[in-house]
Length: 226
Image (cartoon, rainbow, N blue to C red; front, side, top):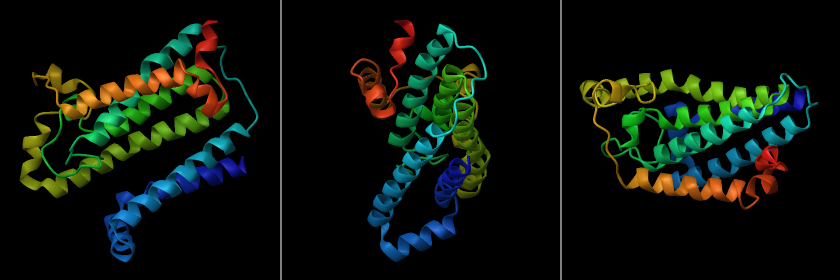
């Protein structure tokens, strides 16, 4: 448990750096933006691998009896979560997390102005439900809560950064997924949204049909229906 807590602490610390502009800008000025992005990506991936390894080393403690519908929830929530994360990263979004901060908000922002955070949360929830054990609750539940906890912070930063333009952007979207459509916002599509859908289909097909999930994590989700 000590290793898991340590790994989670390092993971949270690393992913808090982009949320602190002064620290991020100081690092970028020192080493340059390309080096920062490459280095940050490598270190973050290493921290994530350590976190998953530490979680797998924990004892298996079941919390509820698994049923086929639990796995079905993952097959629904995880792809939707992946789609939101990919679309959110590919799309320009001055309102929240994206690798493209410049330009008007992409079509995915109409679904929610925080697609990356909600995507990770839905992906994590699906894995908590399907696994039903303590280590999965700690790992995926912790990741999901961390993603959702970033939404209020992103809201405050966007309001401060956009100033009077905030109301214009916010009127076309919502914090809660799909709520903007209920308010009368008309859905639209763009290249990033289509590309994210295609990438999600390809990723899910590789993970589930081509053995990618078993290769990476040692478990075949399809086997629960065998």
